[in-house]
Image 1 (tube, one colour):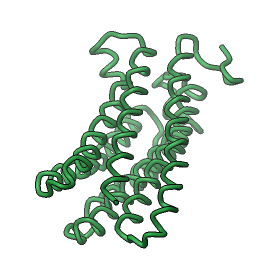
Image 2 (cartoon, helix red, strand yellow):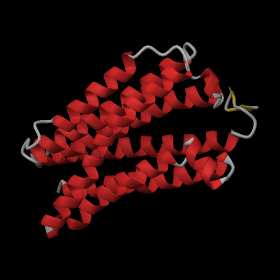
Image 3 (spheres, one colour):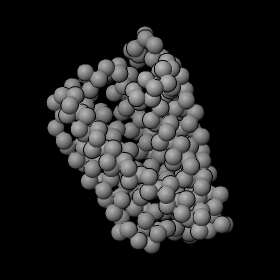
Image 4 (tube, helix red, strand yellow):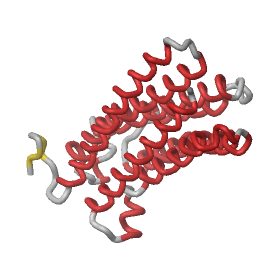
Length: 237
């Protein structure tokens, strides 16, 4: 069935629409954050600008990577895992993966440098960069190779948990920043959960139709992005 001119697999029309909704949410947040950064520049607050810029860069990379994933899922593979390793399918997936990973890596380095006074020497961001590059250049010729590169990405993705841990710590140590710090922390966790619920494992566990899981994912991700944006803006003021 064609949706917006694209040949979408029958039964996946609603998941496709939900994906478009989250893309729209990200696009709106990109405009909002860019406008906010422009206002912050007038206050000459270097930490605030750097932190908001990191969040903006992350949302931009998540926005672009989601476009690649959308093409990979709904146009090229139709969610058939046996086709994931084919050319050019795999390169759409790899491009989406490295873009989102770089957004996380940059934000981790900014947080470390600007908020933590470079206490960790950018270690977590560097790990993300290394694993994402390894994942991108690792040769994939079959589904077993795809599983390997997925596992490599998981290792780097674990570093993203540094973000909520850091902000929980900041909130616990600084009562004045508790609300905003916890907003970023919980928002990050909710976003990860929102991304996970559309995975095959969660769909099989709950036994719900894919469109229901995609609706849950869209709602969770929207709430998460709003929480992160709220926390970032007020944390930086």
